[in-house]
Image (cartoon, rainbow, N blue to C red; front, side):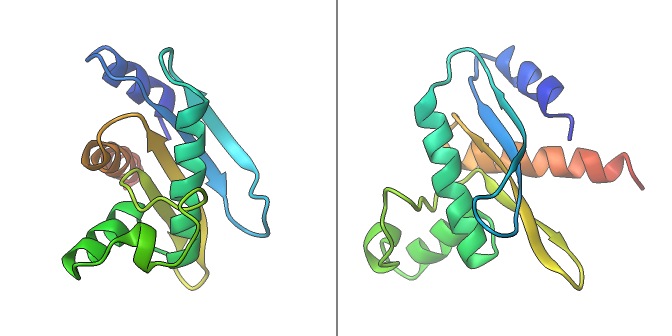
Length: 133
């Protein structure tokens, strides 16, 4: 993933993001890549972990899960019956899925409003896949 260049491009627009690429498997999941732009904090790292936990539990993007709960007039923090200190169904975490295998990891960012976090990750995945066609 071209995270660093993408993060710097977004940073030039006044954004501060932290992102990582985490391999799934047996917890704790090893982080393969982490980049924190100037202006981010340990809070962004905590958000990344909480979003990753949602992806690893549900197998869908954190934005999808949060949107699904809201569409059903549910509050994820209450109705999921999970510790909100460990799980956050906010945009920015996306599963890495291999056909016939399943979720093998996540790609996650934190620091923008949740829809923008989600769109940032989706844009990076599209760019990566487009460069490998």
